[in-house]
Image 1: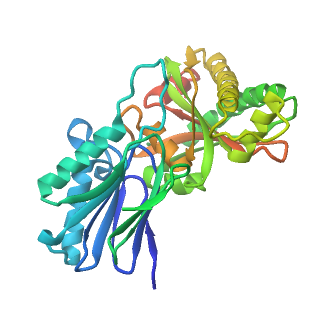
Image 2: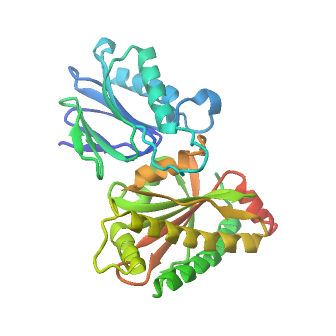
Image 3: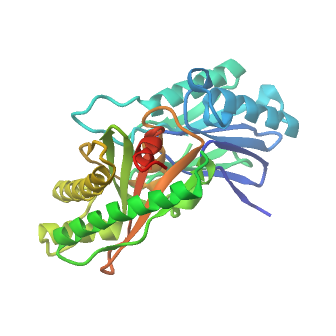
Amino acid sequence: MNTTIMVGMADFKVGRSPDKLMTAGLGSCIGVCIYDLQAKIGGMAHIMLPNSVESLQGNPLKYADTCIVMMLEELYKLGVIKSRLKAKMAGGAQMFSFGDKKPLLRIGERNAEAVQQELKKAGIPLLVYDIGGNFGRTITFDIQTGDLNVRTINHGEKVI
Amino acid sequence: MEISTIRLEALKEIGNIGSGHAATALSKLLDTRINMSVPKVWTVALKDLSEALGEYDTPQVALYLKVEGNAPGKALFILSLESAEYIAQTLLRYTERPDLFSDEMAQSALREVGNILVSSFVIALSEISGINLHPSVPALAIDMVGAIMDAVLLEEGIIDDNVLIIDTKLSGVEEMKGKFFYIPNEGSLDKLLGVFGI
């Protein structure tokens, strides 16, 4: 059976082909997929904040640094080979601007940077990404093909 | 975040009064009767939020205002596309439904509606509690409700694992479907309820 596994905010899920992984309505959050195409195993995380060092409290899956490490552990348990791992990511938008008000914390941008940094640290190549803008994204990752589908409301749909 | 039953009841009552004021303001603005339901006050875990919001990736119109003052929070008014089109059309006396994505007059009218609605809610809240509160300039987004919610929650860069939400539904005319959320910032709850000794 082909199932779509839903990933909530501040959460990650792993799966095997033919499963698909999906997270809906990414705003300033980042959806990051790490996968081993040969073993047909992959994971998707919905990351909310850049790092746990400044502000660790509560659920560690909120943060790029802690969440990616935990997802990797889970992927290794399923049998992925480190040298074959690849990553893709999407999200990191700036949904609102208040015009005259002081600039916001640019969380989306900082989230994207933090995820990139964590992947680099883990030695996992980031093949492609679709980040920024001021619109939301719903992403679906196909573990079988490694395709990441990115859907938006008014900015088209694409596969990266 | 653990909240006692008595606190939830008190919040519901406060939300009720605030929503009542907001509904009256909106009714006057549109010259038609708009009802707001008795608010649901609840705490929801982040990972369940998109599920709780429903229709998390269909396009909706969101008006977002920060509530500043001694007990800050965030107010979010979420409307279906049809409702927002209906409101803009009524206010601007258009003969046809506007295209909200491109019509700046319509966007501006909606921001004003958000302003009036949230202001009346906040004024009521401020009057009951005696705490100084005032809303910011409204921001508008037409997008997936999940994306809007995560941007709103994360704006301060820190966040609790659970979010306390005062949630009211709008109804009245057939086209009118909307939700109003009020999310008190950390610490604001103690101040708002502390006034009543709860």
